[in-house]
Each structure stands twice: as C-alpha cells, then as structure tokens.
Length: 360
Image (cartoon, rainbow, N blue to C red; front, side, top):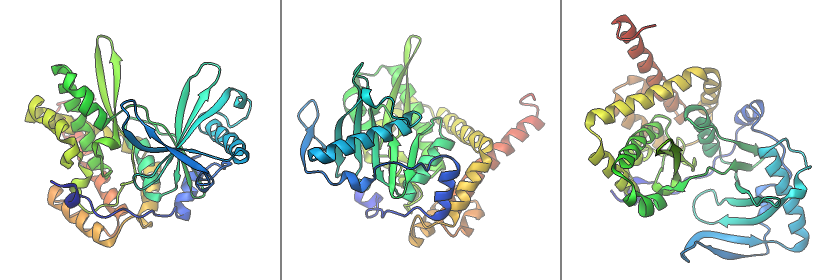
C-alpha cells in the first residue's frame, strides 16, 4: 500500500488547552524554563549535518552570534539541569553545549541539543519543540501505558523532551537485521507483534521505521531487543485504523516478514494477549491519572470530525463494540478503546478464576 493512500495531509498543530495545562502543572510536567522554541530560531547561519557515510541526515547545525550564543548556552544548560537534575547551576562549569541542530523534516521541526560533560566527555541529547497537544497526549500515554517512563517538560508554547536512546528502526532494518541470528529474528518478531498491538490500543499512529528505535539489551549469553516509539505527533489524529497499526506501513515490511516467517499463528495471538494484559494492568494501576487525562482529551479538539467518524467506524468493524458508535471525539474513542481492553482482561481473569484455571 502506498504511503499517499495511507496517510492524510499534514497534521496541524493543536494548542495546549487550559485543562491540559493544569494537568501538566499538577503532575510536575509544567516547569518554568529560561528559553523558548522561538529563541532558538534566531540563528545566524547553518551547515548541513552528514552521517559517517557522507549522506545528508536532514539536520542542519545552526550557529548564533557571539553575544546570543553565550546567553543561549547558559539557558540550555539550565534546561538540561531542570530536565535531568535539580535545576541548580552548580554543574554548569562542567557542561558544554557542543551542538544545536535543527530539523526541517516533519511536523515538529525540532531542535536537538547536545550537552557534554567536559570532565569525562560523556554527552546526552534533549529536544526543544513547539508544544502540540497531540504530542503531549502521546508522550503522557506512552509514560502511563508502555513499559517505559518518559521525561518531558512543557512551558508556554515550548516542549522539552529527553532523548530516547536506540538504533533507528530504518537503520537497524537495513544494516543489522540481515546479520541477526535465527533466535534474534524470532525475538524481534515477537517484539514487533507487541509493539504493533500497543500502538493500536492507545491510538499512536505513523510508526514507520524511522519513528521508532530498536534497543538491544544484553542478558546473560544473548541479546534481547525492545522496540520504543520516539515520535508521538500522530496521537489520536488520523481517521484510518491502519495508520495506528505499524504492520501496514511499507517501511516495516521486513519486520512483518519476520513475524510471518518466524512465528506461528498461535504464538502471534499469545503475544497479542500478553500485550493487552500488560496495558490493562497499567490502566488499572494508574486509573485515576489516566481517567483525568482522558477526561481532558474528551473536551479537547485534537482531530477533525471526519477523522473521528472514520476511526470509530473502522474500530467498530474490528471489535463490534457498539460503544464506539456513540463516540463524538477522539477522547471518547480513546476512552472506549482502553475500557474495551480493560474490560476484556478483567472478564477473562474472572472466568479463569471461576473455572479454577488459575489460583488466587
């Protein structure tokens, strides 16, 4: 399927509504920062950033006038300290802002900041982006419903995101997947099934291979691979259900091939149930916070009426749950989708208890 037929036109940026702003403040996501996205746009010039093979990375390295550079560097060090530490300036003398890169590709047009500790040359990245309600809902849902915690800050129209380390999916598929062993390919297939299911459940769209990373973890005598989303721009926006299922993007065809070649149908079903059960447990453990976030999304505008109508119709065709037909907005659809997962998990668990398949 071609990308043009699958994706709609470019998604607009949605403002942060007062209720979402209050939520972010309550859960320590809203913190005053000394620099805004627009401040970084005042660069004096730029050069193209190439990778080790001399190919254009679609990032440009920007530079500022001497007077502005000093102020910007100090502000970025402050942001780093707020994001990763206690916000104090006692470590500033050991920090250096090595690079400020700007990406003109994609919706968010982010700045990538490289901060290095001059004592030991350890470095890390963080990102400065325009605050977009869709992305904020996506980040918060990833934090609450996935196996991974996310650190981000919002202030005014600026979003600060920590860097998610890993091998870009497109790079891994092209350069590393062919050399993986049979057992590693089977393990990657399992993780892709779970990742695919998780994205569909919480309505995170556009997970093409360059929007997630592969994270290798060494465990005793083998490598375990995990898949993490890194782009949350398409949270609860598009109308086609397929956009929320990574398996339908042509960029992911090699991963889909792994699933087809390495897993039996029963195994695929097993891994889907495992992921749904995990998400259901996360919903139950964070029910109050998730409920508050969804309540805000229900009163917010994060998509178009046409997309809402199409998505609720597509999901009804898949689940035959009449509750989806009554949805009026993306927040409603998300609420019913998570409730559907939670309700089925609880029903199955109770049935197992009644039939004495599990002990309590």
